[in-house]
Amino acid sequence: MKSGSGDDPFAETDADPEPEADDQQEEGMDVETEPTEVETSTQPDIPYKFRRDSVKQDRKQRPIFIRPEVEERESTFLRNLEDEVGEDVYKTDALEAALVVAMDNPDLVAEKLRDWGYDWEQSTASR
Image (spheres, rainbow, N blue to C red):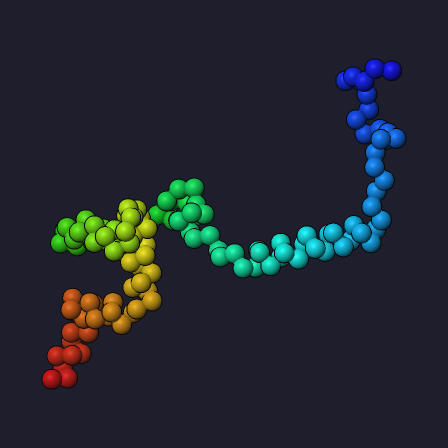
């Protein structure tokens, strides 16, 4: 009979090679899985910048109110940051990173807040 589209693609034929013995298959599987596990555990995590599809992915929009003098410094901050990093930086990434750095350094934020008048009454009363 002529082979064609009506043939059963899953039918066994005499031309199929004999399957390997179970112990040979297990050895081959052990050899193949061990390097994969090692490779997976030694690969670094993919950085956030490359894991996302867009700059807004997995982020919530939060309104922030800033004074004009702070807004004027934003473009200079971004240029300086891009010079430091050596590539273009999304403003969203830069501002979130600045917020994270501030959260990691509350002493620096407290210093700026004192410059703005926080703790002013306490510091002047103790003089």
